[in-house]
Amino acid sequence: MRIEFKTARLTIGPWQGAAEVDLRAIFVPEVVHALPPSFMNVSDPQSFLSDLGRDTTVCGIWCDQRLAGILILYVEGKAAHLGYVLAQAYWGQGFGREVVQGLCHHLPKTEISTLYAGVAPDNLGSIRILESVGFRKTPSDQDGVLKYVFDLR
Image (cartoon, rainbow, N blue to C red; front, side, top):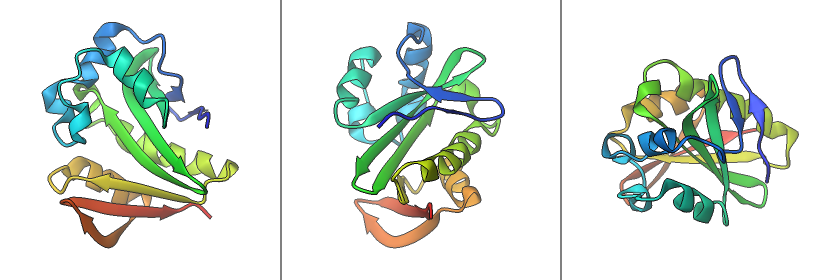
């Protein structure tokens, strides 16, 4: 699935062509500590994202022509599982909320009807983002990950 859209300050589209320094800023321990283990100790971000893109949709989150983060969607039928990460320089400025809200406005134009997200309980920033956009916490708590759902219809 190809995902491309714009928000007030961001452009979501292909990540390829990003500067190596911008890619590396996303994969530092302070940024990826709450992500799945596969995101830890990434030595070659381009290869990692290329490999990840074989089974998922991987998009760049661009701000002023610099790669600010990565948006990941794993699609299963009419449902998608959301993942996103922003480089630390972009934290605390509303970019996370802006990209998730933009995605929720864009996806109804596709076949996707339900969006899921998992978040570590200590990732308070992502929890606030998901809840502020309208995601509902579900009762499932698998492997210590909080689960959220957003109905796009």
